[in-house]
Length: 284
Length: 162
Image (cartoon, rainbow over all chains, first blue to last red):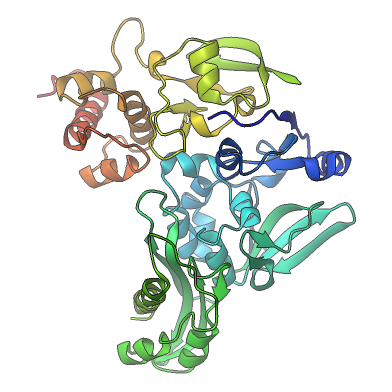
């Protein structure tokens, strides 16, 4: 399958990409790893007139610790995050989730920023970013702004990113020592996208859960924070019984997706199972 | 609008004008006549189109030729050196790592990437590294053995691999 005719231009910098976007408007699409966009173009689900390639911009590809925050450039590949000690030191779930995306070849090309901007409801990064209290950095013609991951994913392939903006980085507050995290997913066996994925971080002090952050992707049209679980477990002992009780009702207040792989009922069941597994894994 | 690209393919620099929409796999197969790289599923699932770009295994059906501008590409044709088979090729021959052979180039390129980063992988690590490659003959056991053979050969090139 060959995509529709499309022009191709490589941006020299983020600012160059922004001016090219301004010049071409809705006809343009940003191309990074292209592992969501090019398959969509081959299927004629997307037919931009011009691709603005930002894959090789070194200003977008870095992972650094900046005064208590982990900053990951949007152009970092999933493989970059799998192999990043800094990312693993901040949250174990970052390399763990990265390593569950697609396959090695996909991880070598696909980028964090591309995945977040694309916002596939079954992608793995959105839940992880919400659980990590990440902020998404956006740059547009009027300057830069940040949006909390909690507010970034607005629906089915929809985000707070405006048409004239570029997602440049995520910044993640490095959690207190002793915080443990995990990302657990039940994957679609061919695509390896999440049917349900649960990202969870927690710390336990004196036998009680002191901090907890849980997010779910794959279940609804957008990743969301599982506030029911957080509220039920904060300050409680992380016993199997308490966790079992806390995960009940996960997803009851969102519109649950269904397809020929997994019904609504099955996904709701999986969300509870995977939330329980994730929480047991990081609190016992 | 076409784009002029220069790509080093199997050690040789080539410059061509490509359409924006030209996929790398078609550039390799149709423009350069390197038909060892296969188009299988064409949806980035099967891995038959796997090549190395700057040393990393990628799926050439899911990227544009223009994206490879300036890159070093290795295809299955570039594995043997001076008429000598690459250890991974020798492994596939010795361990009967192919049946119909369609997935073989992609399997070998994925394996080369694995062995570059992990010269002594466990069976489990080999199977995980092949997540992105399908063998519809289901010949996975011998593919794993072929990669184990290649690992031994790379680690102990002088020793005869049994």
